[in-house]
Image (cartoon, rainbow, N blue to C red; front, side):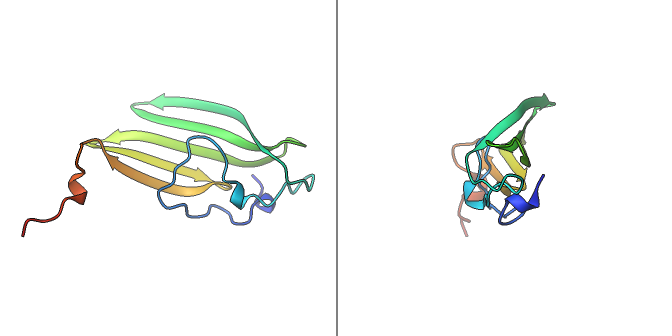
Length: 112
């Protein structure tokens, strides 16, 4: 992974978790060939361990195959919530939790 290719390492992305794609706003350009072109996705792998799905891939420079960053995305269901996380030097770090119920109990207003 290359800190010279990104504006900011592991930017905080709040609850925006990307299963695929690239956060190009954070891409400075390839530190190896000094070109700012498309970022390719290589070595994509999906793994399902005990109900947790893990997707990993490399962000790679289109021109010289330089590895810009390693992306990891996880998805799982815990109790009544879908849990998402993302960790990537280019795309950032984020986590999100969404209720599987029609009405999220955390969002309901107190009665009194």
